[in-house]
Length: 479
Image 1 (cartoon, rainbow, N blue to C red):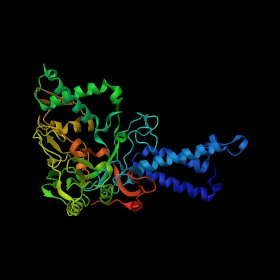
Image 2 (image 1 turned 45 degrees about the horizontal axis):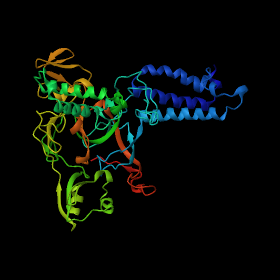
Image 3 (image 1 turned 90 degrees about the vertical axis):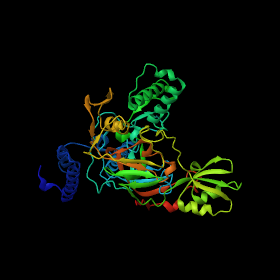
Image 4 (image 1 turned 135 degrees about the vertical axis):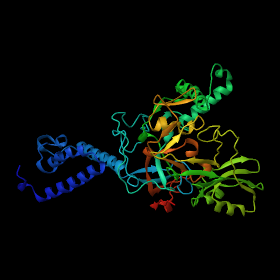
């Protein structure tokens, strides 16, 4: 082929496409992909292979309308897949865990390049669907091939106080009909209930550690779930990148010592500044006045977040300190007090649900965040704290025999972490299912950072009153 006969415009288009392709290959770091350059050259210059043969009409005629529609649809799906993979994706706020920072019904652009896009672990998947087609309830991805975790270079890394979108860590196993609470909470609660109803199940069992007791309880609950598919549905495993997306605020980084004392966060022993819109539940008792819809709308309290807590009238509602001070001045308010968590002394209210950690929702830690390369001493007391890291997140086997810990069949008294781990909380602290209940977030679960609200709809109102015009194209601020 004589390149001198190729029009300059084609050469320029090929040069731009080739440069973009080479830079992308360098970014990805897989230089085998350079073998695609000859294909690119043929598409733009040599045209030896008739790549568009399938959409050519008979006898050189213009292709039919349906062929053009298919061509446009395929191009759009591929473009969306690439954009979602490397640049950004859409995310809708489903719960009030970040109110008033993020509102239920906010639609966000989530930047993948903020922390570096994560290469897909399940690369063959339908774009715009996380794990399940909504109508057919079938998987939207294939189990093969599977790729190892790899993150490309980004503009930065996760910082403390960033709002972060991530895959739900304990969403690896899902009972299809019972997704909330998560599978592990479900089997633990069922197993505990089974023991309470039938203590004879403990006969012949010899538990010399809390870890072995927990495994037994979980097995009881697991058997109930697996044997009652009509109530719980099929039990499914989901790869890391196909687990449900969550959004919370990162409150502790790898290597930091995290603690909550009476709702105040301490990092490495120092109190930190609270988010501007931090909320807690308050008990509001009136002089007999019934609170009307207008009262809650003025405070921006959704229907899901308000609850009548008893006689009085007595309400339990989330508010910022500023809101609480304003409400406290109303004449009809008899009592307004912040809700306090009541520990039963067993340490079983929050992660790791162990009698050796007497923590609660409002008083948690101190807890040192696992850091890549750091080594922790393992004991029978702290094993439940790291059990999922060792097994579910980092792929090892874990056993306990005669008070000796075995990892991958070898006796050990320590473990070295292969990844960084983060602690995530919601700004609506008493209405948030977060790391206090399911533990650490591994680095390979990080998806990206929300940067912009492009649409916001209030689900408590009908159209067009449900459109929050003031939130359109609002940038997401991190403290």
